[in-house]
Amino acid sequence: MSASPPAADAAVPGTVDVAIVGAGVIGASIAYWLTRLQPGLSVVLVERDPGFADASSQRSASSIRQQFGTAVNVAMSRFGLEFLREAETLLEVDGRSPGLGLALPGYLYLATDAQADALRAQNALQRAHGAPIELLDAAALADRFPWLNVEDLALGSHGPGVEGWFDGPALHAALLRRARAQGARLLRAEVAAIALGDGPGARRATGLRLADGTTIRAHRTVLAAGAWSRALAATAGLALPVHARRRTVFVFSCPTPLPGCPLVIDTGGFWFRPEGRAFIGGAAPADDVDDLPLEPDHAEFDEAAWTALAHRVPAFEALRVERAWAGYYEMNLWDHNALLGEAPDVPGLLVAAGFSGHGMQQAPAAGRGIAERVLHGRWTSLDLDELSVARIAEGRRVHEANVIG
Ligand SMILES: Cc1cc2nc3c(=O)[nH]c(=O)nc-3n(C[C@H](O)[C@H](O)[C@H](O)COP(=O)(O)OP(=O)(O)OC[C@H]3O[C@@H](n4cnc5c(N)ncnc54)[C@H](O)[C@@H]3O)c2cc1C
Image 1 (spheres, rainbow, N blue to C red):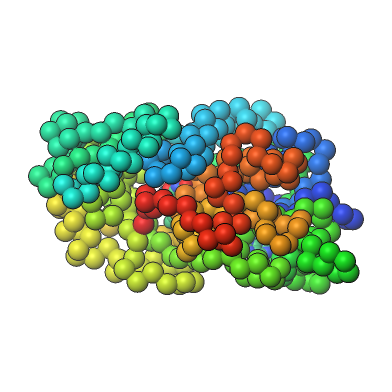
Image 2: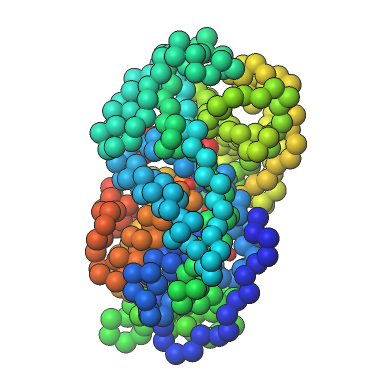
């Protein structure tokens, strides 16, 4: 969690170039890229809680992988890693560099006999797109990870050096700080609706209408409100299938160290990784419904989860759950992938939402991409068309098999 919330700026006069609703890691990254690519652009971030108490960006497991099932996600994360490696320089403000604690022991996806062909196919795609992910058979797994029970495993895929975890809230804070140092403003306010132009060309987004009745006028409006994006999109007549789905992260300790432990994704879907001297882990709940209160569901770490963990890592028989927290995945129920770019039928409005549990690592690429659309009307670096909002109306789904929890 961020230590001290940033103080917000004063009210915004006149018309701005770009108004962004939501100053989580996605909104902050968009503001950072806009003001980096075009210094002098007037950008305002409108955020109802600059302490970010419920924001997913403060409740994230903040891990980064290249083991995706689609080329666009592999490319976005590869750029995310490149950015993280340079972030201490890129995000420096007044001689202060953020410490992001980037650790790269890899992800380790595990597969039974029945799952092995799918893992091989994904590995081929990842390697074809430049992700150096190794395949390990059971003997190689046992050799590399002596603490792992491999008796029911056929295969694992491991990406040391290119996958791991970092301090996500620190990345969020640093993007926001640097964006503001580059001229972006942060306004504390609740947005009630996307403001729409009337007269000819009605339904053009003209800015943001605030809960206090005032309006921020903007040439471009960007919706980056995380798990709360659907309701705001509806105010512009846009149906966005982004739903707030609670995920609980458990922190547990184990008396036996697990040397070289990566982020492990077990065959049943439970994931875990080291966090300091402890471990964190979780899984998708059996009953996944919208808008549950942001309190951890301790029942999810039940006998079955415990048994499965102790089966995979016998040392976990002695594990102790220390605490837990919960946050919202901003789940895109259409196809579990980000929705990026212009909103169809609402000129002037762009969307960056629905990251479905991988938005922290995609924030650098998503922010750069949205900035390019705003400034140039096209992707100028990474082509993110596959993730366009228009794909819903077109009936097109991005098939991503590797959605975690
Ligand atoms: C438990 C958990 C684990 C995760 N693990 C990973 C991981 O390992 N790797 C990874 O890449 N990603 C992970 N994620 C996902 C990642 O954290 C999110 O995708 C990312 O933080 C989303 O950022 P955001 O800016 O879109 O949303 P948020 O951080 O939620 O920010 C949205 C902001 O919009 C503001 N807002 C909303 N409505 C309004 C309004 N009407 N007016 C004004 N402000 C408004 C909110 O206050 C909030 O601050 C995880 C998420 C969770 C919950």
